[in-house]
Image (cartoon, rainbow, N blue to C red):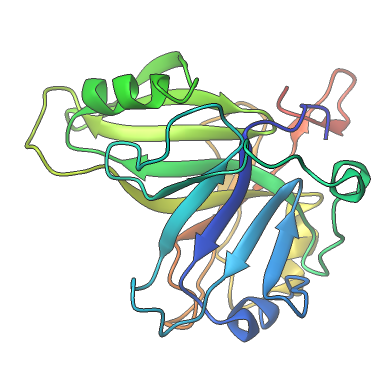
Length: 225
């Protein structure tokens, strides 16, 4: 993928490793599925913190603490091992090659934007999503952070992690490989891309979609960068 690795180091999920392995993600003995340059750590379905996306680890120079209610750990205090820096992305049998975007929901878009700014994440653009909602986008290197909230603040509750969109090398091949567990690919909002929704069942608690890679000049699949 052409976009450089950014501050997103790890996403922790309250699912069992075997559930993700059943969808043909390559999951290591340590319960980690490395997607692109981001580790998805599978903490188990019975973690006391619950299900879904439990938190993230950022390589950021920031004081310890959550970001507007998003459980956050920081990796900047410890240098990354050289072998992790050089390690190539893992090949997943289902064709997944990276995380396209991570979705966060918030009742107050500007408040969450300000909080993200304290860890060095600056908004790139805002899009009207319809229904009185807006999407605001941030760059985490190869991953896009999409924050969704109402046009006007709608309460004081915290922001929360919601779901993932994953990039695949060949969406038709992935749809065939996961037949019965992936919806029909259709046109995405992004030009010249297609998207399909995973039907994971109860074992995978994170809403997941897969997307075709961004076409590079000349019609070849490339990066979003």
